[in-house]
Image (cartoon, rainbow, N blue to C red; front, side, top):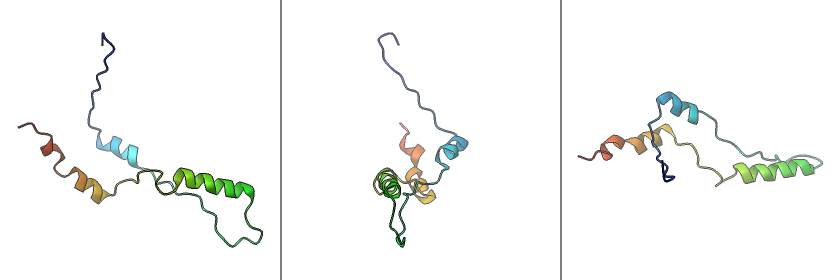
Length: 83
């Protein structure tokens, strides 16, 4: 626009596009399994710490289950009506 404004038009996503964006497995942190006779190498310990920092608890929002999605979107369109 002339004065630098930005207008964002949001369109609902198709079912195929929604699936494509959400059809992935949730990441799981790499964990060291106890029981090694010699312990763990420096590389393994660093990898485990980095994985915990990137994928551990509280680092991402888990994907909603089908039941949560249905409950969230029940009556979605009715609430947007301006009648």
